[in-house]
Length: 301
Image 1 (cartoon, rainbow, N blue to C red):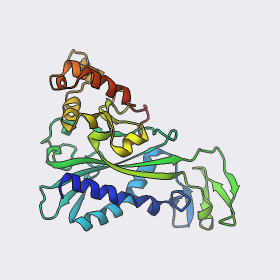
Image 2 (spheres, rainbow, N blue to C red):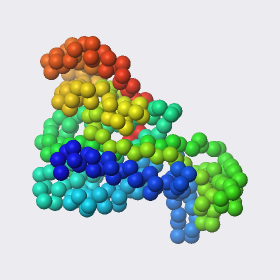
Image 3 (spheres, rainbow, N blue to C red):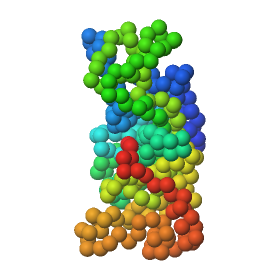
Image 4 (cartoon, rainbow, N blue to C red):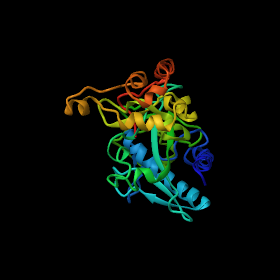
């Protein structure tokens, strides 16, 4: 498959994921962890833990997708390696697709907390490097994000209960300091619900600002419509501009170390300063900057 065909196939595949990891009412089917004594420990609300468990649930489904279309799956050798999953064509190993699994939660009906989309230094700049990447960045046909959007249950400070007609028990709003017997499993409320999956090329959902604070990660747009449809600011400019922008981007610390100032910090200043940005009209750059919703300081993984 070429990059467009692979993208469309994966976009189609993930549309069924919600019904496989959620109940009919939209609750996550994961309630917590169980020990050999059949005690249930409630799922924490920590977004990093939720992200990892979601990834574990999705991997078997992505393995099935790979087998269906004739790909091998290569998982990241270490936690900080890029990407999460490499799809390698069995008939032609030169055809590789990078897929990162990213999740984030809604802050209202139209926006999410944001995602970090990987480093803009290291392997992203030296695209033949093998450092912190499963295969050199340049060897992938495309770089995709499998995104998971969800809603969080509000945390509680002590066990609370709600009457449930479905289970015959009172529903439990769990705390992370309590354990629960196995026969109450279905009564434990899920920490997250209302899933929405999407797959987009990374550049199409990237923002022109770092993921959080002064980090060296690319940030995502936060408008749900932009994420799902792949309508971030770089989608109107193309992947070449995205690559040039982030390969030459300097945050404050990076600029200070070379005795300089950041040459640009948005698309408008990029269009003014960078030679490759000269092809972008200031009017277009300013409009895209207005549409660029950016990210919040607590961007998820």
